[in-house]
Image: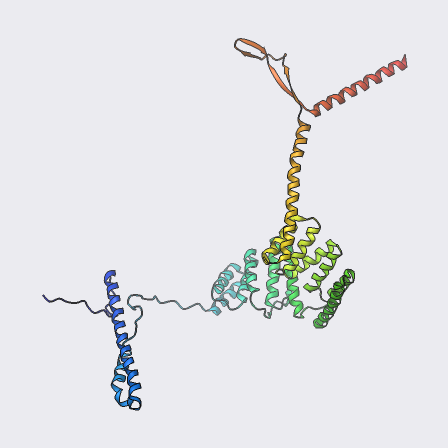
Length: 429
C-alpha cells in the first residue's frame, strides 16, 4: 500500500465538523501562505541586487525576475478568516429617523404621550447628533410625571452647544438651553426641591439675558451691552474701594452695578465678600445663595456660604456645604482649612454634649430616686409560708422625693388649717 499524504489545505476545504482536523488544516494553510511570502521575499531581494548590479541594463537582464515577482505577488498574501467558517448574518437596515419622528408627532397630536415617549426612546437610542429628541422626550416625561427622567434628559441637553429654538416664545424661551432649564425647574418644583427649581429658573433668565432677548415693561429691547459696561465700571470702582478696605463704599458700588446687571455672578460674589467683612451675615448669605443659583459649578459660592454659616455657628449646615465644595475642588487649601476648622468645632460641641448627658441623667435619677421601705401587709389574707412557718406578706413600697414633698405640703396645709381654727375659736371666746 502506498502512503497517502495529508490533503493540501485550501480555503475551500478548510471547514469541517472535526475541530482537531479544523485546527490542523488551518495551521497548514497559514504555513503554506508564509512559505509563499518568504519565497516572494527572496525573489524581491534578488531583483534588488540585479537592479544595483546591472545599472542601465537592468531592463533587459532583470526582466525574468520582474515577471516572476509580478506573477507570485497576488498569490503570496495572508488570507483572513475563511468565509465558510464565520458566516455573518445579514443585518437589518437602520431605522429612518424621519419616519420615527413623524410617528412621534402623530402620537403628540392625539396627546398619546406614552406612544410618543416610545418613539422618542427609539430616536434617542440612535447616535444622537441633536439635543431636540432629548428635549422632546423630556417634555413627554414631564406630562407623564416621570420627573427624574426629565432631569436626566435636560442635563444631557445642557451638554450640547446652545442653539436657537422657535415655537416656544410664549414660554419666554428662545434657545435650547433656556427651554431645558425651564423643564428642569418644573420637574424640581413637582419633586418639592424648590431651591433647585429657583436656581434653574435663574439660570434660564441668565441665558436669555446674555443674548439680549429680555424685554422691559414697555416691550422694547433692552440695551444689554451698555448696561453690562455700566455694571463693569461700577465693579472696577468697587474693587478699588475693596483694596483700600472701604467695605461700605465697595458694597455701594457693587449694588449700583447689580442695578444694571442683576445676573452678574462676580458682582454678587464681591458684594458678599464686602458684607462678610462688615459681619452682616444675613445679607451676605443671600448673595452667596445667588452665586450658587447662577453658577452651581462655581466653588467660590459654596465656600462663601460655608464661611457665613460657620460664623453664624450653624456648624452642621456649614459642614455639609464645605464638604460639597471640597468634592468639587479637593486641592483647594482655603476650603480644606475652613472645613478642618468646622470639623474641629463640631467635634468639640459633640464632646461637650457627651459629657453633659451623663450629668443630666445622674441628676434626673437622683431626683426621681427615693428609698424603698418594707411594709407589712397586715390586712391581707395572703401570708407568706415557708418550712411550715407563715408570716404576713411583705410589700415593697417605693417612696420618691416628690412623694415626700407632697406629704410635707399636706402636713403644712393641715397645720395652717388647725392654727386658723384655733384662732377663730379664741376670738369668739
